[in-house]
Image (tube, rainbow over all chains, first blue to last red; front, top):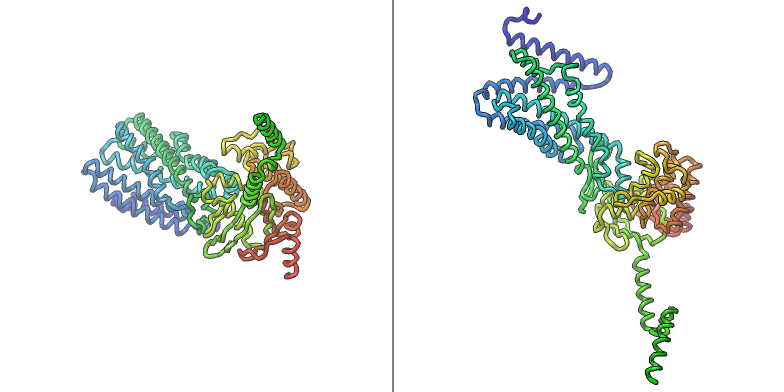
Amino acid sequence: MLQTLFSSPWAVGAAQAAAAASLVLLVMFLARWREIHLEREMIVALGRGIVQILAVGSVFILLLRRPAWTGMTLLAAMIVAAAGISAGRAKGIPGTFRVSLCAIAAGAGSVIALMTLAGVIETSITSLVPLGSMLIYNAMNANSLTLNRFRAEVESHSGLIETALALGAASKEAVAPYVRVSFRTSLIPAVDSLKSLGIVWIPGLMAGMLLAGTDPVYAAVYQFVTISMILSSSGLTSLVSSLLVRQHAFSPAEQLTLRPGGALEERAVASK
Amino acid sequence: MVRKQLHRLYMDAVFKTRNGSIAELFPAADTLSKAREQRAVTKTSIVLETAQLSHVVCGKRLVDNMTLSIERGEVLAITGPSGAGKSSFLRLLNRLDEPTSGTVYLEGTDCRRIAPQELRRRIGMVTQIPYLFPGTVADNLRYGPRHRGDDLSQRAILSLLDQVGLADRAESDAANLSGGEAQRVSLARAIANSPTVLLMDEPTSALDEDSKAEVEALILKVVRRNALTCVIVSHDSAQAARVAGRVMVVKSGRLERIGSAAEVLHVADAIQ
């Protein structure tokens, strides 16, 4: 229908984007009707999304003929940006940017490096950057879920955690059940993606490969490879993140500093 | 002849020593030994001391310059109006919170020189709400000793539960206990760590009237049986008078009065 109204591919693209965005706005109004206010967040997300993806498209035009290290640099910048976004999801826990940066770099970075060395990801920018960004994006989500869930678990179980500390448990032992819950919860989306692959959804990468004329069996196998890489990078990110973040909930004298209310209490810095 | 006399004197000395009358042989040594013993008693009779202890949170002085000492085997009650800083003071004693200034001494040693886990094992705590860990009653009792590498025997568990009148509930699910039973388990769990000092933060205030009297009687029995030094926070001055040898009244984070229950609470009543 849109193609009949507009002749230029740019105009068709803009009309398609407007149609998709209006659906998001519809959801926003439905939420508002149920007194759930997401207006600001959704409008900012829509605005940022379109600007960022257009910027990336433009960068791709510039990068296509550049050497492989340019792609690596771009992925490194993406990891830093992902750490910044993810850290914002865990307000109230100090040092989350560093935790997120280490976790995403260890999770997504190591999987990208290993798979590139193994020849699973090609070194060309057109292959390395889209696939790498996919892994970084999913690692960022896993990290955000881990931090968010960890904070919620610790805040809602502060009584039990302090009871454990009062009985002589070390902070890492007192918080261990909640670290495990955070890790497990953060992996639900990635595990479900792999479980439902081909049954509930056919991912965009496979669809794109089919449209480009790739052998359907190879496209399917490569899609499995991609989702497996996403699961491993998300898992590794979440594991590193949950292990690093636990020490930020306690003072050096093993006192719980992350309390209900989302803010750290003003406490004297304790020395061991 | 001389040899025989010497032998008789030696045998006499041995006999007297065996019968504990060393004073007859070495009066000066006995005096010295008694003086040493006296000094040791004096030195160790103070179990817990606080020196100008203060705790400031967000600019508010929750505990203000508190100095006091608690003797071995003593039961000290802390009473005062809500928000007076009673619980805040208690949390500084086992270093669940860090003092802003001042310090706590346990048996003459600055608490900052004792590892937090060891300190909290030696200063046990029973909280207002009995937070029990998921699992059985026995699992809860094993928790503290397990963290210092001890496996509490079944016999020890039954003996502890017998003290709190729950000898038949070792394998009961902790989630299925009533409030009074849960507080008894919490008390037994604190005792399982063999603490030197037991801190109790309003242990009966969250219980119904029947359970309140039972748990209070039980606390007294357990404290006496285990010869514990005990600091109990209670907003109920009648309860403070019933359980403690000495009562301390706290107001706006400051120590208002301290002394025998009769004199302190009489003055408090007169003021009111």
